[in-house]
Length: 284
Image 1: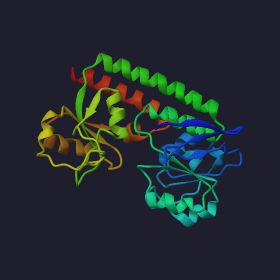
Image 2: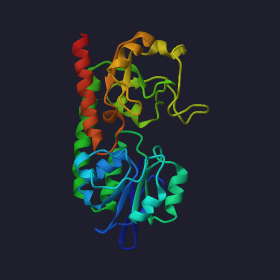
Image 3: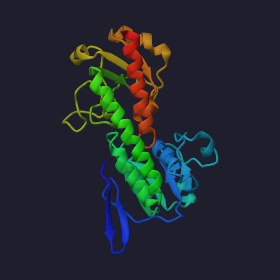
Image 4: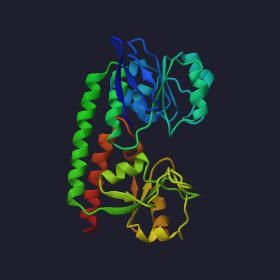
């Protein structure tokens, strides 16, 4: 994700992931967020009072969100409820929201801000984009500094430990994993965990979240299986089942720490670094 600041006369504007320019919003902005990670980020930027709507999956920060109206889910947005809230801005993501939903919203919402971070580093542009539009540059700079520090910590760990090939499971029945051009795969790679299969969703015939069976040949290269707590809620009870199928070490991981971008990115990288250290120590 690349954010560019441009000048229109004396006024600055920020370019989102869809190439749309957004001028400064001013303090009267009314924001509906259709992305859980972005909702959390808005509050961490000090913009919580401007958030007038969110999805049912937007759960952080829990206490502050209790009074913020829900507008459905990320895939099944209640358009009329959004209209009633009269937002000036709706925040969306290319992966998490449907194109037809975004097109319908554009008919009555003045500003649709499109995001598409694909790596932890892309959060730097995301912070600049939302901080610039909504006048939270100082808070955005603080988040950026913390993320740069976390990225440096991950790079130092990666230099110390051997890389490991992993299978990251996001669903069961059918079994599903992630392609290497996803944010999840990039986050795991930042700490030395490289996902299999070695495909990208942009390749012909490939999916960003491919399904598989336990007989595929590339499974022989997998050294560890990671079970995510979201979107499928893998639990400890699934660890033994997958261990029998994979015949590899299996570990449960907090999906929010791996897949949530925004202000959780730095925390997620540090959490993964700590997990890698713990596993190395435990397994000798």
